[in-house]
Image 1: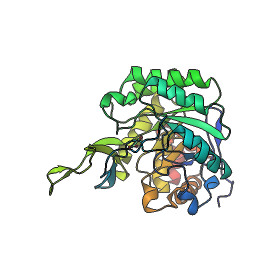
Image 2: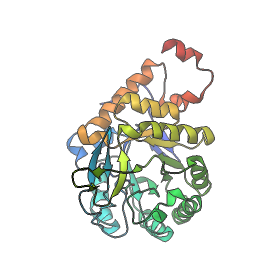
Image 3: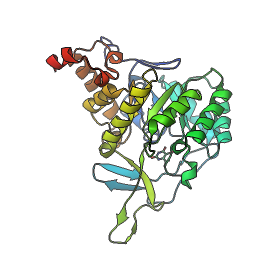
Length: 320
Ligand code: RRO
């Protein structure tokens, strides 16, 4: 259990989180499995698997492939659909006394708004993550986050639907030429924060069968292999939009990795792939991050956010 002698809290719009480590959407479903290993209230938030309007069985198998320092997934938005999610998952999560960020995914701008409308009056939700960057869709035209106009339209629609009720965190793709341009657009459209980054589009070919390993052919690359890409994205976006809070994610598996994200400009960190190997990874990372912050002389996490951008680093350079 963490003590509160150092302020590790993070805010996204009107949502406040006492701890900075969140589940990465898709890697912990609605948290039931992780709850066997630690109380979910001890992490910052559970970010749910992106939910669609209708139940989806996802892509055909195989849906996973190992890669050097990472993995590919081709899940294809498997999930129960919003009705069942609101009936079963949300009440369970509320009972865990944790903070809930609901991730939503639609195939059209309208579908995102429909999902937002369903969430508007649900008690116990802190924020909505708008996943406009799933790589495992029918065609690249559906990856809204690869197109500045499409990204804006989705966020504008969700903002209009939600009014001022719930903070919006837009989840972006690294598979773009200029992520800062996309980030600016969604912030202008009403996003309160950003989740950086979703997985990178990748592929593995099986040299025995001579065919793509994944039934869906391509998949999303996650794990330590993508961490430098994530750190770069967080750094670039924080440099351009220093007031916009970022959930940094991509290959974080230690407190030191999380610290790197914070120094790049993240206000919170999400952990996904690492929890497959170590279900307690989120808590371990949170505890290690806290120790590192103290060791480097920070009295709060906020003080360290974006520290790598500062030119007057002399004091801590002496310490570290
Ligand atoms: O379900 C998925 O295949 C998936 C999603 Br929605 C996403 O946002 N990112 C990813 O790697 N996989």
